[in-house]
Amino acid sequence: MRMLKCALMAMLALAVLALPIAGAADAPKPVEVDTAPGIMAVDENILAPVEVDTDSDIMAVDVDVDEGADLNAGFAGGEAAFSKFSGEITMIDMWDGQQFIRVTNAEGGDTDFVINAGLTAVSDLDGLIGADALAVGADVDAYYTAPLIVSLQYPARYTAAVIVIKDDSSPGAAFVGIVNDEGRASDGSIVLNIFDETRLAMQSGGAAPGSGGGMGASAVMGRAVIAYYAVTTRSLPPIALVDSAVILDKLGVPVFVNGAKLYGAEAFIKPDGTVMAPLRAIVEALGHDVAWDADTNTARVGVAIYVAIGSDEYAVGRAVPTKLEAAAELINDRTYAPLSFYTQILNIEASAETGLLQLAG
View 1 (tube, rainbow, N blue to C red):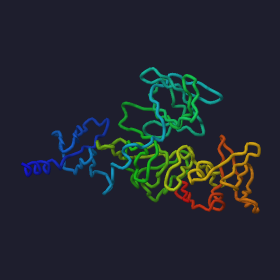
View 2: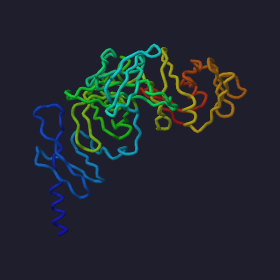
View 3: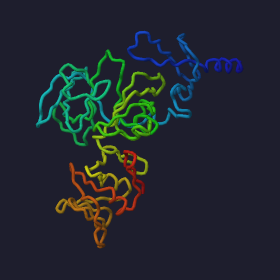
View 4: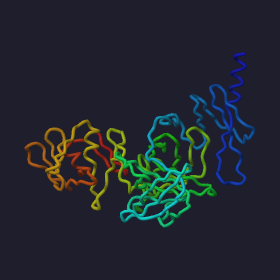
């Protein structure tokens, strides 16, 4: 009986996972798979055999998946890069000199989203478009980063990071979020199969990382992106075959400290190329304390390292201050110091060569 059961399981180890193309009139019906422990039931729509692994209730298929890829990693317990509110635009108006839209969801709840001309990316299911495409009646997904302190006003009002205008008749789809170097979303909800041939663009209009060199998924590692695709597998998580992607560089440069991403604490690049990085978030991630003196607009790192807003001289104890290439800046109540502060004053390793800021110490 045991041998018979093993033989039956071996026969079931080959099955098809069709890649559905939404909107295609003659697309075959996707294969439905039940991954209950020890059982795999496949319908009759079999086209060609592929390997299916049903360990741990996760189905990994060897179509368009790098050999050895671990689809279980990061599938559960991750953190989404943005909050999302879906619904219909029911109002377009102005607030404090900026355009905003009111989005009403299926339950009748309203949320207002400010369209920041220098920040918000407006897209349809094919690529970036202008904010003038926003219209009452449009079905949208609004992505935003919820502030730490939320106003009790109704409707709630957020600055939109991304607005995606949806079209039920389109075969395309759009993912908005942060991905790792394997193309996996930060919350594990999807794997983006980004090839060397995937068309990459920057929200700012600049050259995408590795343009002409074919960096594939490594070009978007840790970056906030809009990824456009029309084909996915039916695995868990699904694997999307990405046709094109926009790197949302206007949201800032992602910062990693000892391999961990700092969410909501991006760096930025000045017009002269100087990288300015958020002081408190980085220093605390490195295990040091930061104190703020509001009277002198000065931050103290540890016992005796001083960062004065507006000054390009950085003091350590009673030693002669070190002059660096840029003065510290205070933006939205957050102190930024040039990258050289971290390398020369704090003596930590830092790199910003791949479109990311990575620090280790």
